[in-house]
Length: 239
Image 1 (cartoon, rainbow, N blue to C red):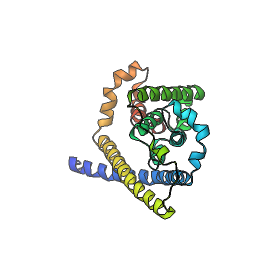
Image 2: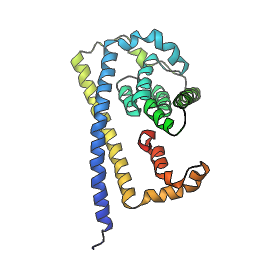
Image 3: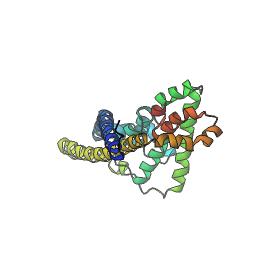
Image 4: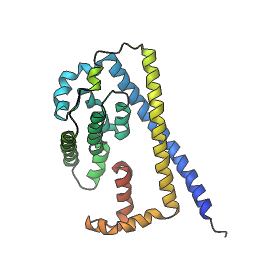
């Protein structure tokens, strides 16, 4: 039997990685595009601003405008990419996007990940409340470190859109194309890295490398693969 060369391994792994990346990307688009379009249309129609009286007191605690509630809620239920899709079409400042990102990275995909954690013996309600509390505290800490806000871009656009709907939708399409290209590059890079690591047995080496740390956490080395996947890609994949 002719041994497989290093180049052939890399070529095969790259092909598998690209195919998986494209499948994942198409799945993500089915999630991102409807959420992004719905968010953009809600903002265009002024519906988000009609909820200011309800959302502003809560969001103000986190140094965020009321419109930030939408990407946060989407992130809590649909995951990080859904939150990104909503943020991409709302005019947040860099500081506001930073705070939203901090919150969502801690408290994202709560229903699905909470169920996975519950299967490991941790109560669903406790883990969800703990993540929400951690997200709020982290936002407060980061907000304290950020420079004072000079006025929200969302509030600056509150007068409504004078832009015709056709031009508004064209702008949305352009923004989604830019975002889509960035996400595609990230997914392809990640999938290529995973498949190359598999092809050259690097994942097993990483698990062995973290064996002392896993032991410290009280985890068997057999759970190392799931732990590593969960840490890198989230509980939804690791579980």
